[in-house]
Length: 304
Image (cartoon, rainbow, N blue to C red; front, top):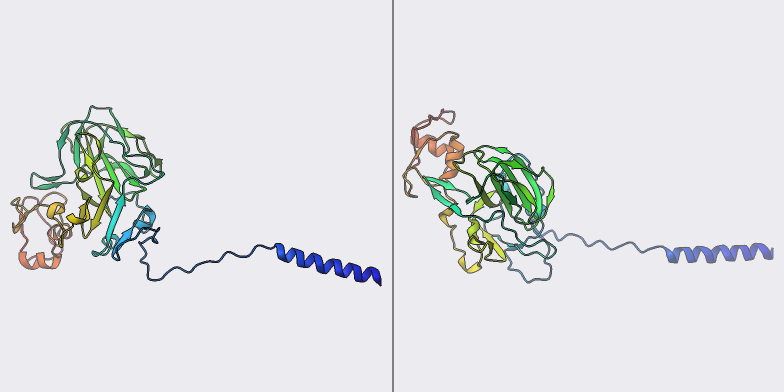
């Protein structure tokens, strides 16, 4: 009888001890439903109410990862009232590296009645082309006009393009560091000489890399890029109520006030409507055509 009582007491004590050693489940804080899908929680820095502090490329691009196209769906773009700051000097990342140090042949901007969406840098065939920032390869392929092209999505949120390469030295999904070999310089695609066509994009929208890169010293001009409503600046005071016209393709006359467009190879009504901030329906009405109309290269289409 005494042995049974002692055994029972020992069992109770052991049970109590075991329960006390069990870990307490971690408390899970519910997500604040007021946050948008493409925002990150404040990391301690005081932000403006309409500002997004973005440091994660998956959050920035809503986890979209496409290895065939440069551009993104229109609904990927943030709200026009959102101000997004891209930090170019993130802790833990490698410092910026100039892809190629050479003479600037052509800057970002209007060229021959078209928009030149990058900066052309002279190099010799076979020269090493390096990655600008840490990131991951999203495209590595032959792309119309660009020839051999590599597109890297960077940890900071920017995307950079390296085009007209003689050879591609990375694969899709490769993780790369600033300074790593991307490819060898050349003149593939639409290129009249050996050069690197270097682009910077955010949400698929190209902008002038000269805003943050000094092409004389090959160093960063700024530690950040700020985006709002299709504007790209390095200082908040430079933001305007309306977006700058630099990303608009020029009209047929070379002036933004022109009202006609000369049909080029690859044009279609949807592309033209997007260029001039109008709709296919309006273009059809003005030109008295249907949406299925075949556009002849060299013909003129009225815009308004």
